[in-house]
Image 1: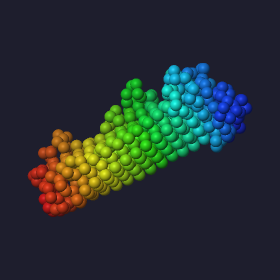
Image 2: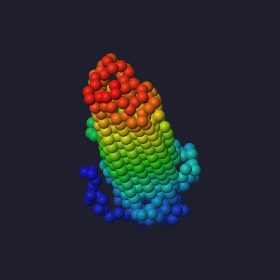
Image 3: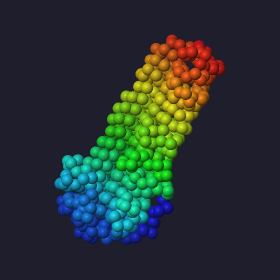
Image 4: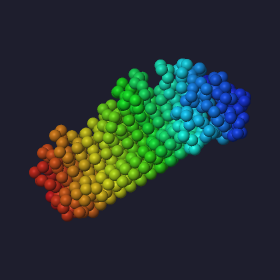
Length: 448
């Protein structure tokens, strides 16, 4: 990235052992490592286990503190270099971070950490986060880069990030009682803030695998806060909530797999509206305790491509957007299949083996759906167009019904505006094709 200073990277590193760190897993190395940090030099953590059995006297929220005395941070951990947090950190300390990058003195221009392994302890009541970057008054962490990291057994978040621009590559978080990764957008700024993620794994997280969040205290940020992200190669296994978006984000996501989320797999919060944009490609969601893809917030634009949702206990896909595009979608083994609103364009949607009374529900103002496959789906209405006074145009081109019995209607139109249906065979249905033929326009259809 443009902010990454190659000259700074190539400078000679100083070993934390030169400041007295031992790395034997027994000696408390916190003070020695803090002295190394306070030197402002690029640091090397050789192979070894660096025990942290105390906390900063300058900042009670920190075990190791980077306070902005120097505007650049550059750490390199050799293979086997581990920060081990002992469970004797006092429970009275609230929300402490193992590595706290908190610019109390001046803005930190760049913080680069490569190869870090943090192992905390779940046997403490202290809320411990692995790495935290934050604002402090007018000071920011401008650029944060973390690569090849392993963070395990934290009683709070793995990473809690508030820096302006963030690059995260090859990050693994295991057994986090908070979010594996929280990207918290507390400040509106006229300059775009960014996150780039390539390679992120979360296992056994008790909150969100990734929380793209607005400010907790002030609610969703205004559209003036330009938050943009690209996300690739994400694996989430056995988390409580999967992945969430809140506030105003523009996100592009590719190659994401979410397995065994106890609640929703992917969730757009209700405070995400108007400005937000989401583009997803090659996403697989399976075994969710509730919905697979659940969008309560109404984004300005949602585009879902090559999405598969399987084995959900509630709805497979719910989305509200001023501009919604669904392409090559497979929904398998769920309850209600689809609930959408706004303006939607769909091409190649398959809903198979869903048991709800309505499989495809629309509140859309405008909908064009081509190549809709309904297989072993439904017990009431296969398709239901709800009463919507703003409806303008609803059109289906090529619907395939297969083993959808028993159902009462193939399509039920609760609007006065007509639904256009073309190239569809209703003869497979034992129930009625539609509820009222006068509310439909048919072209190249049989069995009506």
